[in-house]
Image (cartoon, chains in turn blue, green):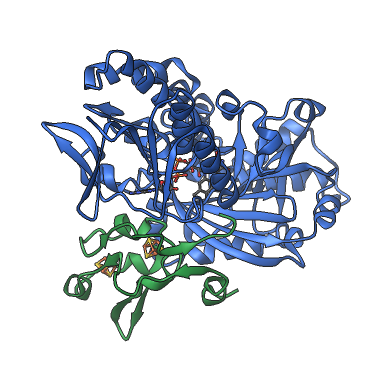
Length: 430
Length: 90
Ligand SMILES: Cc1cc2nc3c(=O)[nH]c(=O)nc-3n(C[C@H](O)[C@H](O)[C@H](O)COP(=O)(O)OP(=O)(O)OC[C@H]3O[C@@H](n4cnc5c(N)ncnc54)[C@H](O)[C@@H]3O)c2cc1C
Ligand code: SF4
Ligand code: SF4
């Protein structure tokens, strides 16, 4: 007899969601989290996209510690001297809220509390060291020589899944699997944020930036999100570009973002209250592990469910939905008390039928677009020349826009067949 | 802002009895790239008079150095018993 029906490793969005679903179905579930309080080691940009939580916590937005709903979503290219941005505000985003800014130390603590309220046993401050195996089947977890047994284990360790790696369920990570995120939180009064970003109370601004001006060809994206009375700002840098460069400190890149002439004024007067960093899963479908086996399933970042297409960075939403699907699989398997690989493989089917795996398939290879000199160097430079041609009045006759566009493209080497093919491939992948 | 100033706003519960990350100094001695010194966002890896110095106390547990070191010097484990970085916001 196992001590628990299921053990969930990690109380991030994936693990907490799985535990809430299991406990709500009267399963005897243990959620083990290494940080105390839960969330105090977790980092996210972070906009929580989608509404996956509503399936386990109806009306979750009313009680969750969300900061602001995303009312204006932007994408911007930064060069040394310029900013070229697309700003999208819509009354439709106000009516049907689809993105909320969150701070993980608060959100995760709340999620863990919801798991406890649903009936899960939650232990904080305990690091699972390894999986307990019997006859090739996962039958529990181990810590400091103690074994706790369960019918199945759901691994939700996040982007750096040590237990899964050490147990041979996940390969070791390499440059192509991850990027490095570095973030700062600046305190500013709520009113100042509302005025500075033209926001009504409760509404928020979220922008992703292509940083086309970084020295030595390092490729990084930036993000800036407004919270209630703070601003989250950070960069995500490609690990392989950082390595190729091998002369730029990761912490200097965030500095060159926050001190950019069009970013610094947004943070002006703000008090830097927290500096944080974490790796981000970026490898897409190519770096996913096998998602189930005898007595186990893997969800969230540990399963590789996270990606960015340059317009948004997503992961928390996939974590929540995959956690719920893993829990559903366990619940279905418990009818026949069969937690073998053969029985748990329906987790894969559930994922394939959901938007989680569909997105991963749709955006297969997107990392080659988001981390390419075409996006990080050529497009920003081309857009800058085009805008300057359009808007800088120098007392000379103007040309038609197509002429200017062709000029700007040719100046930046974008009319070559190879570049056109690159643009075509990029559009197809995005 | 200097990296030291950034780290100074952070809260840690330092585990004096357990270094969750360790290095093998003899491997670092012959390292051709010292990529860890550029990759680590918490400046835990520094070169002092040409020798690699590592301090786990400032680590924010980002997970980078384990894969950044391509020479097998780094042994990376999770912190134990709620030790390590404690974010207020995250
Ligand atoms: C800088 C940055 C910006 C991002 N921006 C966004 C964004 O804007 N929107 C978005 O949707 N996503 C964003 N992401 C991605 C998002 O953070 C992840 O996809 C998401 O956190 C994954 O959730 P998870 O539950 O799988 O893992 P995590 O949130 O990492 O949770 C894993 C949990 O497991 C615990 N744990 C790990 N190992 C053990 C163990 N052995 N024993 C006990 N506990 C353990 C950890 O402490 C942690 O609480 C961003 C990531 C970064 C780093
Ligand atoms: S930790 Fe690795 S990368 Fe850093 S100096 Fe040692 S061998 Fe080189
Ligand atoms: S885990 Fe991150 S912060 Fe800690 S030492 Fe390694 S690179 Fe530095």
